[in-house]
Amino acid sequence: MATLTRPSVKDIWRWLAEVPDPEIPALSVVDLGILRDVAWEGETLVVSVTPTYSGCPATSAINLDIERALNGKGIEKLRLERRLSPAWTSDWISAEGREKLKAYGIAPPVDGTAADGRLSKRIDRLTGRANLTVACPRCGSTRTEKVSQFGSTPCKASYRCSDCLEPFDYFKCI
Image (cartoon, rainbow, N blue to C red; front, side, top):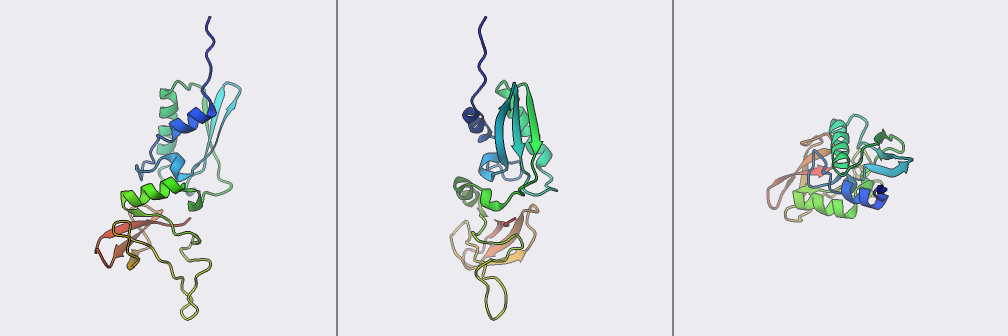
């Protein structure tokens, strides 16, 4: 009788890196940084997922996609855990994920930006406003302007480039 070996955690992370985010399919759930842990508890695989925010409408779809992907690889005993603490932050998007966002036409979060969109260190002393510079993902220009705080999904804002005149989404810092 042959003994079945269970897949390594490293293999499982590799498989999950192929599961796309349903709202931004250029990113995997691993790129997005929402997978917090993958571990075996006895014969059950436990995958901990932190949604981008507690009301994210894609959470159920993401969990279903994770379950389908792992079932397709032969994982039968699986438990998905929703981990809300610590809360997800756009800082968890991988460097590769940020490059994928740009290639997809979405400006990645500006480092050092607070959840409310203000820069924590670069405040204009005269106006009290943040000097948030969002580069156009298409042409690289920093001559951009926010059109709306709300973009195609709740985690994005709408911007326009003054040089190439193209609209684009900016992945807000959360």
